[in-house]
Amino acid sequence: MSAKYIFVTGGVVSSLGKGLAAASIGCLLETRGLRVNMQKFDPYLNVDPGTMSPFQHGEVFVTDDGAETDLDLGHYERYTHSKLTRENNWTTGRIYEQIITKERRGDYLGKTVQVIPHVTNEIKGAMKRAAVDVDVVIIEIGGTVGDIESLPFIEAIRQMRQELGRDNTVFVHLTLVPYIAAAGELKTKPTQHSVKELLSIGIQPDILLCRTDRFLSKDIKGKIALFCNVEEEAVITAKDVASIYEVPIGFHHEGVDRLVLKYLRIDAKEPDLSKWQDIVHRVYNPKDEVTIGIVGKYVEYEDSYKSLKEALVHGALAHNLKLNVQWIEAEGLETKDESYYEQLRHVDGILVPGGFGKRGIAGMLNGIRFAREQKVPYFGICLGMQTASIEFARDVCGLEDANSSEFDPATPHRVIYKLRELRGVEELGGTMRLGAWACKLEPGSLAARAYGQAEISERHRHRYEFNQEYREQMAASGLKFTGTTPDGTYIEIVELDPSEHPYFLGCQFHPEFKSKPLEPHPLFKAFVGAAYEYRKQRHQTKEHEEESIFLRPERVGN
Ligand code: GLN
Image 1 (cartoon, rainbow, N blue to C red):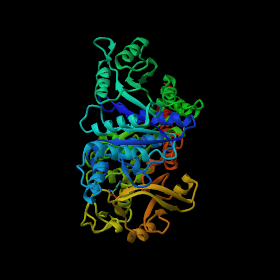
Image 2 (cartoon, rainbow, N blue to C red):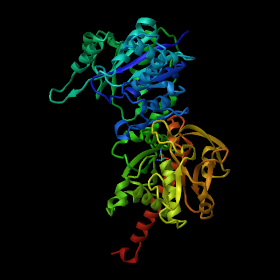
Image 3 (tube, rainbow, N blue to C red):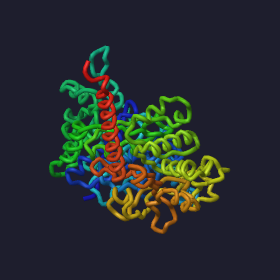
Image 4 (cartoon, rainbow, N blue to C red):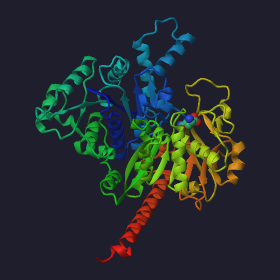
């Protein structure tokens, strides 16, 4: 059987959760025993999101093969087992890059190169290459229908239906059904307009996922079905949920997977959702809570740390805990404003995530010093490992003004410097150490104990590295180098000894990209576990202190 396709488009407004919807459909099909692949097409002209600001684009998700991709691929990996590579995320920019290369090579043999058929053929080619060794390919089209930029992609999926037929393609359209308080009603008009827009480009959706804050009544479903020309059972309530891990279960209750299989004429077993139900049960029934402070510079825009936040949630769920995140603006820790330090004093663990550029670094260093001296569990990721090394060099080894040459090219102590393999490379696009690299762990270290294995593979995205000229001196002062590439070229993990600090670990890679709700990442599990131990101990000490105040003689009796 050759693979069949599900195309997911979105209408009315962005941010309705198209990526999550696509990932949840993938998840449901996998639990029914099907093999799925997932692919996203983004209409913008950047070749990839690698050079875009986190404020513009949110997180850049890195795959094993080193592609810098859209954050929806993170959802795909968290909900399914599809093996994602650079083939799974295409932008208009990359499609055109290919076409222009071919044109310059003379591949078009004198023809006029046009959107139809050349651009659409290139798009369809990418879609078909994703259909190898799987039963179903789920393809998400970025943006909302009606955007000029997304037209070639919509046209390409229209042609796919034309070529492959009704039984091999399903169109799923995500739309909004808002509740208007003044009228006390759910409104279907935006959905009708959005479907009309799709119809005008030749696509009749098969399934409508209606994002809403309440269940759609039979009447409303009937009305949408009538106006939009879909079966009534194909009008799905996609209700807001407290946890994103409920979405597959909600979709299943609404019959999404059954409908998709019906339209694609696939026979599959009933899904086994017990593992997802267990996750949702944990979300609603935590035994306690834990608060992690994230000291970063994009904190007002949470999408910049999407996978990180999810990985922390997974780590907390693994201990049956509710996660609270305290976002702490790094630049605030550079000021004399005590309220930022107050935030630090109330968290159970401190995390400095990845980032680029000089802004906020001094604040991060203050946050790390606080974690190290006050013995608060610390987890540094990429930039958070580099800044932890700088803080240690300055405050423990006395290397005044130690820094990364990224932030101070004239620093007397370049503890972090430009990757040796990148010297002389000035171009920004795709010029980093990217993707999966092996790392050897020192037996008995925090990392080795967390992973339970001697060699690991993790994903990277950085331009600077730890300068090994400082290794001996810093090791003599107590910084442990517990993870390196197998050939010893790069330092991957630094730690403090557990006799010095309850939990202090920095890694040059991004473990958050590989964490899944059903497979929490060992380092997040270990860090959240240490934070929870610290919390319990802190609360005990506090209780103890309160108790001893109460027991003071002057307070006893009248
Ligand atoms: N800016 C640092 C570097 O390029 C850290 C990168 C990151 O945190 N992803 O090495």
